[in-house]
Amino acid sequence: MRLNPAARGLRRAELITADPLASMTFHEALLGWMPMQTGAGFDCWIGNRRCASVRGRKAGEATELRVVFAGGQHDGSLTGPDDASAGMTRGRAQHGPWAPGPRPGEPCWVELFAAEAERADGFWTETLNWTVSDAVYAVGGRAVAGRTGRQVDGRWGWLCYFAVEDIDVAGNRVIELGGTVVDWARHPLLGDTVVFRDPVGVVSALAGTGERWGGQHSGEDSSPSTR
Image (tube, rainbow, N blue to C red; front, side, top):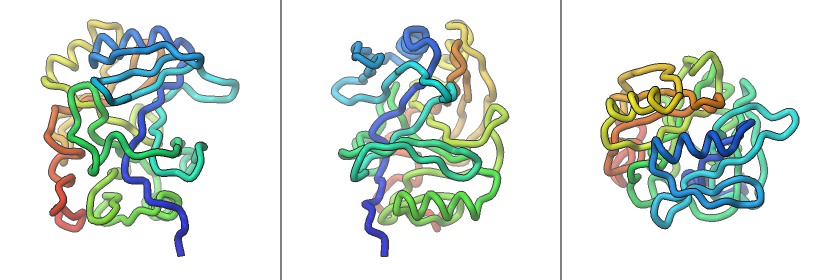
């Protein structure tokens, strides 16, 4: 019997970088974040919801965007197969299928890039109390995250998508701000997407603004098995 509560979405995204100011400034200009300085770096907001934190990289840490899932009994880090890392924290999900729909600049979907589906599914469903069907992780029939069997920017792990109003404009803005477009792709749930790397090396993605988390899988009547 599972005793851990289910992770119903994200508390925030966490940018871990060698230059917090540079990463914050880039994402502020790209996504419209409102930053507030903290002792560790920056908390970044869209309206009254914190969407991200930005902090300096500690010894032994990689430069990355770490997804931080909500609903944990304590704060901590998770490392699954393929060294895919995520955070876990207490509190209610601010971004996910039970939260209000994503606004421009906020997380709108997360996806696991995994080499072996069975190993990945075993770890993440057990750890986060999810079910899985057709490469979609769910809680109570609502999709929380996806999984794919390919790499992103030559690596395995979690990828966070942020909502934007115009994907073409935002993709070009990445380049104007000194970032790198890694991939323009058509996503089966999100439509046109852009995977990008900020000037410090943090990789994340953009997707067109939708009314719900993850597009068609987010409604109360949606089920992963209908994909």
